[in-house]
Image (cartoon, rainbow, N blue to C red; front, top):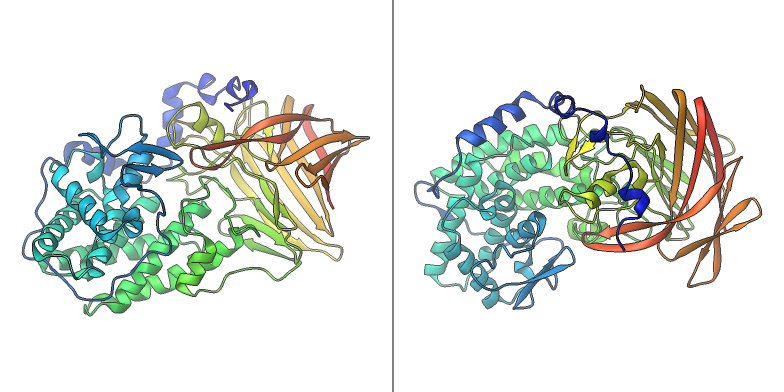
Length: 562
């Protein structure tokens, strides 16, 4: 289905704010290095393929495979990423017409190398090198270079039987690619992109002998230390607050740790020490952000089927999962994620944190005080997920407050979102806490943020007891206002009114799953889109309640689990 008419007609922030003001509120949060680097990139574009300089020799060691491969991505005639398939043919085979930017990026990552027969993998590498003789293409963007180079290095190390001429060609190309990366590090973005850049500089520097490799490693170690210190928070979370990206980075950091452990370079020790603790912390906190079904919570820009699963990561790297004891609360205080789980497959994750780091909220959503819930191992209340990164109505909806299980004030998003990754004004979180009481724990979150007519404040308390969640939403906003609360349910569940409650049923099992009861709240049923994976849309039931108020409102409601 397409977006509902209500979602499409929802007013945008940009309709009520002048664009120069919106731009100011976006730029004022950036770090100076981001502004300077963005300007310098326009003046110092890569116009020719660089040479690494000197002779590069691939150090001998065991190849290091990823935790999971892109199984089935290439069938010999076409590639499938993000649930879209395009033929690999013709002169534009590396940038198919109709494919969006993220799809093309995936094509150039070469994650599928590990699932391809050796002859096919070699042919794909050779074709890429022969085709991409100009740096003015997606293939030479620093982010896909960062991900592709690692796979090529490890593939070469695991294939000693390739002829020397082909090996020399690939090594020469890797040298050019890493040198191109070094000249266009993504300081304009910072965030996970720059950390991936740093990881690859270290990876390549440890994998080759030669003056160029020494320079890559020297620069990479400095950058790696800075970015791990900045991006891996005290609680182990990644600062962009997306479980999907945290899983991708955990794998990259821990694989680099294995590279450093096997390296005979005298400079390997600093890389090993930096990555050992950071990788373990990323993976440990990631255990809090996975449902009992093993999939990640769809918080911020997170979708299933992209990052390796928590199970594959823990199996691959042997790190202990950070699961809370049964019947206990947990918190990641630096990121603002709070939660609860029980021995019967119950799981709650509550987003009481900031949209993301001030300087890089691009993967953040307007979802403060939203939550996801599983019961008896099954997802019950779900976030919307992500369908696409392409700018447009679908991207805007997935990031909107209306797409999340929280309260929307006056039909406006909590944050002033625009474009595909931009954010101008955003809420300020003032409380995120867990209190364990005698009758059960209470999770509390609150924010103050921009509104249509002056600032608004919203505090949500969730009291958890045996098979019951009690919600209290307190809202402060001067004047006459409207509050809309939504409860997006998982596909396969249906709702029906029964007396003063709404019954949630598993349609296939014909089983009563939960009841929703409100204190003076009139719920109505709607249908909303669900995007658990990129390019995949399902429909689901959603309970919606709207209340008009003046200056303040309190909404109390209960979720009773069977």
